[in-house]
Amino acid sequence: MFTDTVLREMEKHSSPGDAEFLGRFFKTGEGQYGAGDVFIGTRVPATRVVAEQFATASLTELEALLESPIHELRLCAVIIMAEQYKKADPAHRQKILELYLRRTDRINNWDIVDSSCRDIVGQYILDHPQQADIARRLARSKDIWERRIAMVSTWQLIRARQFELTYEIAEMLLSDKHDLIHKAVGWMLREAGKRDELPLRQFLAKHARQMPRTALRYAIEHFSPEDRAQFMRRT
Image (cartoon, rainbow, N blue to C red; front, side, top):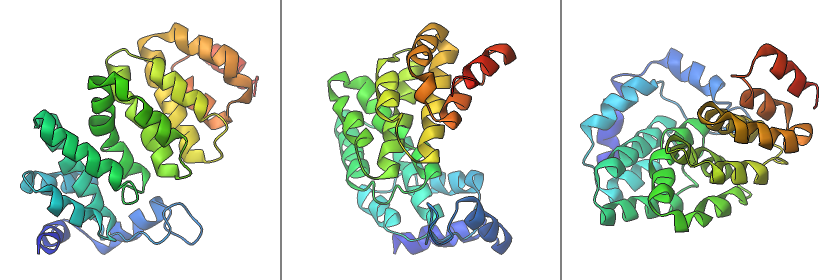
């Protein structure tokens, strides 16, 4: 069975101590955002090594990995999907995107989102700007991970110096209650501002007073100490 084969390879790089640490780091306790997630203790660099071993896995096999309760196997699946997407023809890219969006229920922690959504959802929107409603729909979701996908996917557009969707999604998420969304919003605003600071300052002039402090703090990390202090006083 494919999942068992991948698991055996992952276990070669795992340790009980890392499993315990990762479980705490990704908040798997009762009532936390990663509640119930299972870790075997394989770190990300090793997970990427294993992903390279199974780079040609079929989408059926990758969906089987996504079904696993083991966090590292789901992460491995999306890393393979993202790498396949970079090299695939348009038809296979479409199938990867469809699988990704259909199984967001299994792309359910911030590292799994952040390792994949830019290169799949973000790249698709960059190539098909008329499909930007994908991000808007995800941003309106009740699911935290779909909202994070919406925000972090715009990273690919930022890299292409296309900032409009980033600011639009950030504005949609300003009233979000979850700290992990605040961090994602601030992170993407910061990345956009590094490339062109004026639009970020215009956004902040309009929204800084109602922004969550975490989002604002992330967004202005590259500003001078004086400017950071001035913006933080607004919240």
